[in-house]
Image (cartoon, rainbow, N blue to C red):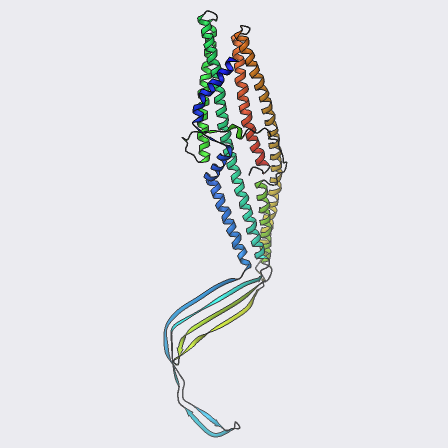
Length: 447
């Protein structure tokens, strides 16, 4: 009991270094990682671009209105004249009277100069063989696809951050275990040295404890270095300076209930992405098929033209309106359209095959993740049981040794078992946390 109190005192002595570090929860680290990670930013930009592409495709349903204008200058000028000619004279009944009238030659000046005009034009598709509808559905599916691609990227960041967080948690707790183990050996060495000075213990016992203590000191140094490196690694993923002093909140990830609640992978980003790819491939078949169907559009235009002086008057100075229907009927293209349809159908078949294969792999991955999580839960429970046994064994060993009923070797072995049990529990909790992350990702519930 004295040794366990000594461990508590030693941990308090270790705590100033820990308290001086900034403690971060797992959710805080995730938020910082999402803000910092460039892959997430890139995926977000692609998602925004896909939304704009969908808006652009929607615009094809509405009229296309354009304004045109032109200004020209020409130096052409001249005179338009006619030759002299005679006109017969008719009476009231339209009969020729025998007289003629002589008409002299006529001349008209003309000059082009500045010619300008403008107009507004409206084009409205009426029926395009389903191309516009299919194009909009492609853009919509692409928008949803990129949204899932963003989820996929975020999932990768979560896994990376979770691994770094778990490694720091593992390193921090192992450092504490190593420090506690060294503390036990320090107290034991102090007791053995006192007993040796009074001739109650042989020199061999002092050497045995010293060997174990040297190993503990080395392991503690390794644990401290591992903790620093794990902290730097986590800082790398969350966008902090590598020199920042941070620590983790173990309770933020040590959940008692990590049992699977879903056996469905339909919400996994990879699965949804393939479904959207299949939808896009199907609509591309419709786009290729629309090239075989007549296309009808409505055209309307209103314009104004001004220019060309003729006989000192403007020849062009008026507005006009035009409306009509355009019809395009495909006839023959030497097999171009039919081969485009075959290409689209082949791509659709390939996408469906890929989707079917991926669904089987995702189902297999989910079942494996469930098994791994189940084993990790059992591992934690067994490790906790081992820790309880090791704690009780250490208490009993200390009492027995202090009473002279147990050898030093047995006491050292009890301390080693205590260290191993606590280290195993730390590893088991970190492993369970990562296996839970793996399961959430496999079931599409990670983000």
